[in-house]
Image 1 (cartoon, rainbow, N blue to C red):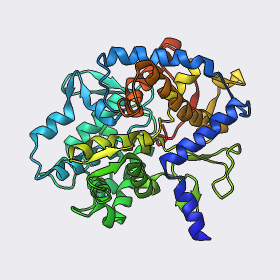
Image 2 (image 1 turned 60 degrees about the vertical axis):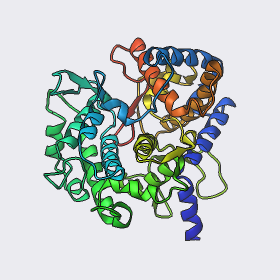
Image 3 (image 1 turned 180 degrees about the vertical axis):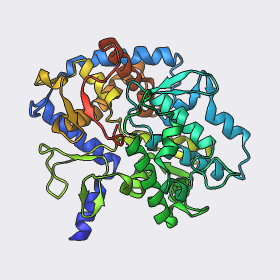
Image 4 (image 1 turned 30 degrees about the vertical axis):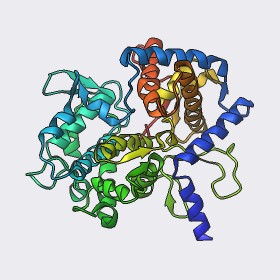
Length: 412
């Protein structure tokens, strides 16, 4: 029976499980069966128009890159990582890919909500940068400066043994955190990087195939699974979830398998041990999207990019709440702060994933595009995330999301 339980657990560590169960949540909601939200699909056309307006401004030719961490390393039109990487010596394409996996993994794990007050002062321009973009430039500066490397002569790497012992003080200084410049969830981020280091150290057969153990060793693990030079995007997510899953703190387990960003909701039915479980895997999918380009640069074709799902985070989710597609049954819930495992937040996040698929279909129909010519990853980038931020700032001066979620720095 343990084998069956483990199989059931692993079935939740997939993009298809996220999509299927999010779809179930939407169906239940459309029938009026959810405790916290009602759904008005008649408002979706307005959402599509707002996303198209934002996308047209940012990408007038509609040549839209993927929603990935790499976009945040571009500041004032300068791609900072590309400039560093293009000037560096790489013995082969795989060496650069390992470095890019190191950078993407560490940077994404540091990319939970920053809070409205925090700013990173950029040494090159002197400007203060907040939120996700500030976290990105800060993490790139840490990486380029060798904070995560065990070799003073080779800064562009993250070594497992260095990550495993990373002092909180090093991260505090690197993020320029002070009483006057507070960053939410700093302890949680430092703990996550240490957990990452320990996990990578413990799995040299995965992370140390062609080098000492480092997160970038995941490149070699994924490359070894390629068929005729092609890797399916959902396989990237499976590798991320199965190999990095144990780093997430205090989450649900099934048959001894940590389920990561997966939560309980009694409305979700199944005839096995996965009943009532809703996988979302937001950060892991954001990371998986961010690993596509390094694989492509290393010469691999990445297929089935739409096999990944939209991201269950507060900008995409806020888009649907602020446009009244999702309406709270109890208006007082706007004022309350909600735990990330609350049924309200689980409903909100799952509905977000399902609605993003529907929104993508509408946007493609309006543009006469196909999933191949306009993948979901590009619609998110164009796109939904930016439109969620735009309407948030138009509704609330600080641009905060429409619902308050208590986050520990490892979910959103």
